[in-house]
Length: 154
Image 1 (tube, rainbow, N blue to C red):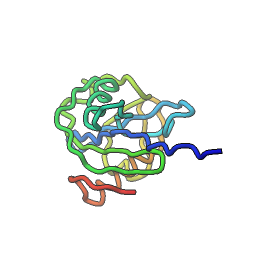
Image 2: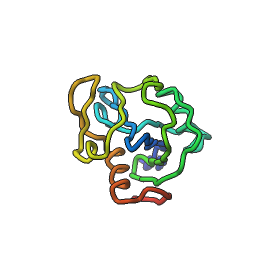
Image 3: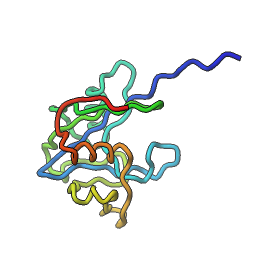
Image 4: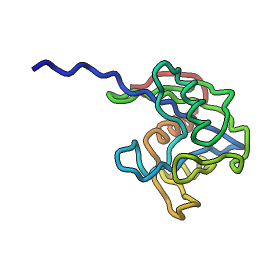
């Protein structure tokens, strides 16, 4: 029996969006089988064939919150055996009320002080939920003072 061909890791692009000192987060759906169900994460998603990470992220932000991102700055990437995540930073140029949540259970602008506790309150569900690994990675970069630039991490 021949070994299975090596599959390249799936690629995703994620946005750390800041507005007036707070960060936009998404409460993921409680659907078994998705990445990090029921946790707070970042908006974004998988790259389609032929898309760059920035193109995929612009498409996902339009689909998920109805917002047209113009200035996405590459920040860092994180690679595991199954997934490579490209993180971008940008300013959210519109108030939260102008966004239309089309994917996920809730969204909010969260203070870093709340995120540092490892969970966040959902106004819509009226309960605390934990942070997804991707959001924890981005938070670690923010609190380490790595506010700009791109680097790899394995």
